[in-house]
Length: 114
Length: 115
Image (cartoon, rainbow over all chains, first blue to last red; front, top):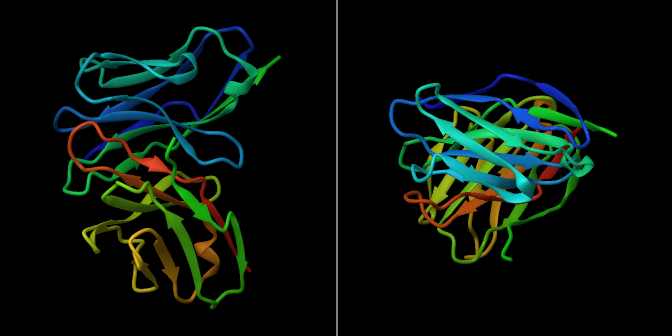
């Protein structure tokens, strides 16, 4: 079965410093992986996706993630945090069944300090 | 940009009452989903719907839940007799197809509070 593990429930950074949100996946085959962001009282917005093309995936708002098969990781990074990045971030894997439902990690709450 | 819309944004209901959560998926999408997020917990899959029938459901999706696509545009989730533990944020999503690189687009959610 597919699963993802987000290693940090809370991350706090200062504005202008790098962001690293960690995610490890478990999959019996090449997975499709996503990062979604949820701002307070908002819906889920797709940040980026990996679907077996380039291992370094660039997303919106300056975020990127690198798929590392050897480490079964898909960490999300951003060189310089902005106050507007404060939100909850979900690492997600697509299930390989007929409906391709999404399986969510537990989320990482990112706080950005001024 | 096309988007998934959900109504209402908030719903408060008394325990035992029926509620219907509504969603308008992206118009050319074929696959529809409901997920829920209990406060402080992760987002959980409830049900997927394709070709006018349920294609997969989780064990959460018991006989109290039903889904319907009544008119070709709306996609509804009905809870027949709400329980306190049904209080959650409910997200609707749609995607063009299950294969390839088509991601799911989510609505902004309906926050259901059962009192």
